[in-house]
Each structure stands twice: as structure tokens, then as C-alpha cells.
Image (tube, rainbow over all chains, first blue to last red):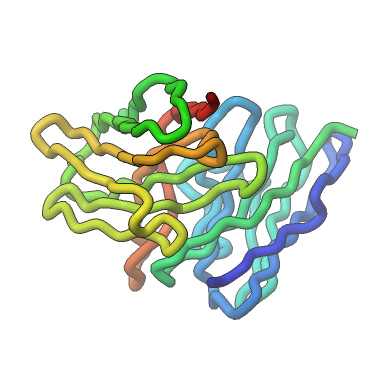
Length: 107
Length: 123
């Protein structure tokens, strides 16, 4: 199975600043990577697919990049609602797995 | 509006059985895979299994194969997750979600999620 390792575990950022989150795969997943946001007490929310395509309705301050084993989610100009936990997920192996998450907290 | 509405929280004793429901609305239920995901503090998010309601085809990830059963009733737009012989380690939040198959692949992203069902297994 493919293991996704996210870093850092927690990122402290001031509102209005940017954040860069990393997801590393144990073997190549090409661009078959998804990002989700989970706010406290809520279900995850679909953000990015195919590593870099935004889901419908997702603001352009969220962007994804990468291919192969190294991926990045970048959030520019953090808004109050962006402080949450972010997960990556790969697909198309019949054993989809998630990363362990990165918490973005208010500095 | 596309929605998935899950059944309420469950308190179970070790060894008991569980059935959680997930009622879909706002889209053609039969034409999208419904996926079950578990979230626990120890293991995070885990993709458990999924069902295609139109033909009831099911797939399970290796850790959950033989441990849980997913099913669906197209007539009432509802998917189910069943588990027997519950253990304390089965405690967590169980989500159903709709699978958006991505072009060129047999799987994809979970684009709509239920609100989650909290399951507590304790003696």
C-alpha cells in the first residue's frame, strides 16, 4: 500500500499570511492526489483533485502542485475559516489511503 | 442540493453489531459509488469500502475486507455499513461520501460527505 506522509504536523500562521503544506508518497502516484480541508466538528471538504485542479467553488487562494511523490498545497492570504486540518489522499490503486493531516493553526 | 444524511450516534458493547445508514438526495443515487470512511484518533482517515448502487458491486480496502459489509437499497436511496463483533478499537466517526470518478481512472475524490456518525464501543 502507498503511504502518504504529510508535513509539518502543525503549522502556525498569522491571518493574512501564506501557508505551504507538504504531502510525500512512498511511491509514485503520478498526479492522482486529492486534498481535503476539515474544520473542527465537520466532515472533510473536497478542495483539490488531480494534484492541482480546484474543486468547484474553492477560492483561488488554494492551489496544489506536484507529481510523482512530492506534492504541495499552498494557501495564500489565510482567512479565519482556513484554520483547519488538511489531508491528502491518493486514488486508483484499489487501496486508497490518506495522509495523517497537517493542522494549520492561528499564530 | 446534493446531500448525504447519516443515522445518529451509536453506543455499543464489545461483540455487538452495528448498522449505519446514509440517505442520499439531490442526485441520481444509483450512478455514483458511495464510500465509507472511518476516522479515529489513532489511525486518522481510513477508506473502508464502497458500493455502486446501480448493480450493488462492492469493493473493500484490505484492512476492512471480511470485517465490514456495505450494501444499498436503491428504492430508498440509502447505503448501509454493517459490522459485527465490534471492538473498542472500532470506536470513531464513520462517514459516507460520494465518489467522483476522475477522468481516466477507476477511482477519484470524495466530493460530497455525510455529517458523520459517532460510534462508541465500550463495556
